[in-house]
Image (cartoon, rainbow, N blue to C red):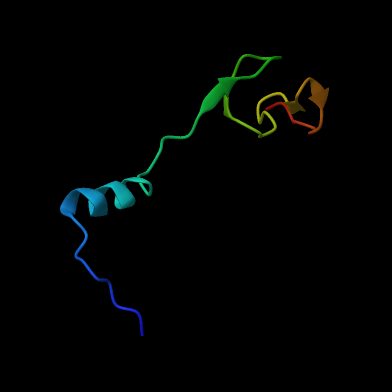
Length: 60
């Protein structure tokens, strides 16, 4: 079984774990209604995605 020849430094271990850090989701404005929505998601308020109507939204 393979065994590491030398101990990894604290700095190198922290750099490796830094890649798993949580990142905040990126929000953008809807081109039709201006609502704030996550990227690559159809707008829940007006039902459009990339300028096309893809959802039927009921008005309350």
